[in-house]
Each structure stands twice: as C-alpha cells, then as structure tokens.
Amino acid sequence: MIKGFIFDLDGVIVDTAKYHYLAWKSLANSLGFDLSEEENEQLKGVSRVESLEYILKLGKVTLSDNEKSKFLYSKNDQYINLLDELSSDDILPGIMNLLDEIKNAKMGLALGSASKNSKPILSKLGILEMFDFISDGNSTSKSKPDPEVFYIAAKGIGLNPSDCVVVEDSIKGLEAAKTGGFMSIGLGDAKVLANSDATFESLEGITLTKIQNLYKS
Ligand code: B16
Ligand code: MG
Image 1 (cartoon, helix red, strand yellow):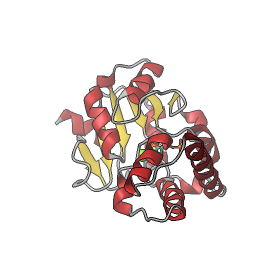
Image 2 (cartoon, protein in one colour):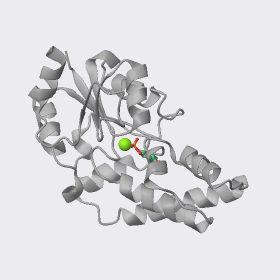
Image 3 (cartoon, helix red, strand yellow):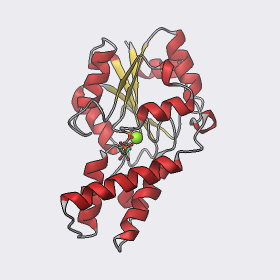
Image 4 (cartoon, helix red, strand yellow):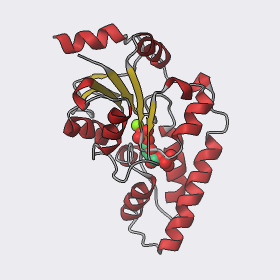
C-alpha cells in the first residue's frame, strides 16, 4: 500500500532541466566545445560537481581545483539568473492536482532532489510549505544512482522505502529508486526510462487513484 510520495524536482515539478542545460552548454562553449541534448540527458539528477567533471571529460579539458570552483560558481550564478522569473505558472501539468490529492489523503510528501537550490525554487513556485520533508543536495553525500537522497526522504516522513512512490525524470534517479526498494514512476520517454514501474509522458490527468490502481494489479 502506498503511504507516501517522494518527488524529484528538476524535470518533474518544474522544467528547470532546460535552464541547467543552457548554463552547462554555455560553460562548455566557453571552453571551446559543445554539449548536445543527448549528452545532457546523462547530467539529469547528477550533482553540480559531478556534472562539471562529466563535461570536462567530454571536452577533454583539464582544470585546476581553483578553476573548477570558479566555473561551478559561474554556472550556478547563470542558472540562478535564468530562474529569476520563475513562478507558480511554471509548475508542470498535473503536479498541483496530484500534490493536493496526496495532502488530502494525509499521505507523506517529501522532496528527493540532487539540487542545492531546491528550497528557493519551491518557494518561488509557492509550494514549499506543502512538503513534509526536503531531502536535497545539501543533505546528501552521494549522488543518484545511489539511493541515499530517497532514503533520507523516506526516513524524514517516517516511512519505509517500500511504502513510498518515487516520481523521477532521470535514468539515474529511477535506478536509485529501484536499488533502494522504492516503487517508482518515470516521467518522459518510456524507451529511455526503462527502470520504472510505470512511465508517463507527464502527470497531466494522472490521479492518485490511477497510481494506486497501478499497484493493485
Ligand atoms: P544544483 P533533480 C538535479 O536535480 C538536476 O537534475 C541536475 O541537472 C543538477 O545538476 C542537480 O540537480 C544539482 O543542481 O546545481 O541546483 O545544485 O533532478 O535531482 O531534482
Ligand atoms: Mg530530475
């Protein structure tokens, strides 16, 4: 029986994934190479530091620790600037309805995101207070596909992994959910997201009852 939900942030609640991509692409361009959308898929759910390492490897660029820190700072700066206009209008289709249903059913609701910017983003969207617990890049030491971020989230809402549904848009996040023993819903292309119990293009029209029925059959 489902007792709680753990939502990923970027690409699930809000389409900030496109802003991460723009900021990383401009960083790569400034170092003399490009970053394709396909390559960017590998960065979804991956921490800021590990994303930079991945991009530098792609471009065969070596930087000192000091230079890396500067690039990490400027990438985040650019990303935050892109988020400037973010508002509740940017919440992805179906999310508000599902969050309301989860709250009305008195189920646990947690965030499980790699982002260190999760609280200001949820705040801009006007939904921070709906969450019973926030597990994000500020509280974890291991990146997805390690299940740590979801374990912390489940513990934070007093539930076992097997009682929680993880909602994720990334390959690595769904792998983390599977390894951790969580139920999972993938959002995106079913061919790319092979690790989920069920995959939908978006949460539009996906009700709590529909998700509960998934696990009855
Ligand atoms: P930040 P999620 C992840 O968030 C993003 O998918 C990933 O692209 C990003 O690098 C990571 O957060 C760190 O974000 O730079 O804001 O700390 O999808 O796990 O919600
Ligand atoms: Mg994501």
